[in-house]
Length: 210
Image 1 (cartoon, rainbow, N blue to C red):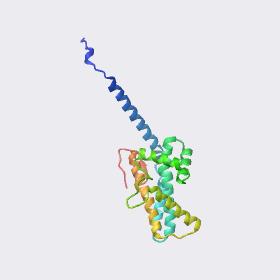
Image 2: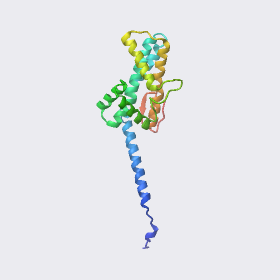
Image 3: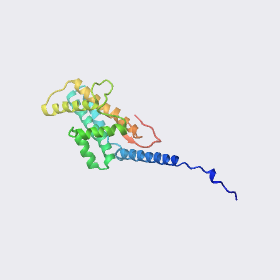
């Protein structure tokens, strides 16, 4: 039986602590990702109502632009509140009732400080922001466009105005950007993807489908 000299084994405490810190960070990131994924994976078709409203708006545009604007506004409202904000809040608090409440307040523009905090979290974990950049071809930020669509919808519903086709087109573009631009990008940052543009999938063995 051979004797192994202690000098054959080297131990550097610095390497050990560096390894532990790296593993802790990986565990935290994985835990955070799984929590942020949780509502999307539990309700993979949560975008269906918003996508359906967008399609209805597009179908009505040529013949009924006012109705098209209303359906585009519905797509925007549901898209922001239920497809983007609520799942992120839910991932942080793991409470459906709290997530719904916070998402409703933000979507209704009644919680400005909470909105800013959540958008900062959204940008950190999803890599996107609704209030600091503009979509291609737009002068306003997405959040400013959302407010404009909301205001135009309220004018239709509460004042009975008839909108110009250009206003409906703008609302449809805003809804399409949220559902066809922001939503898929957010899923990519969470290591999720979409099938047929709306069904969330976490299987890494398959690929997104249009």
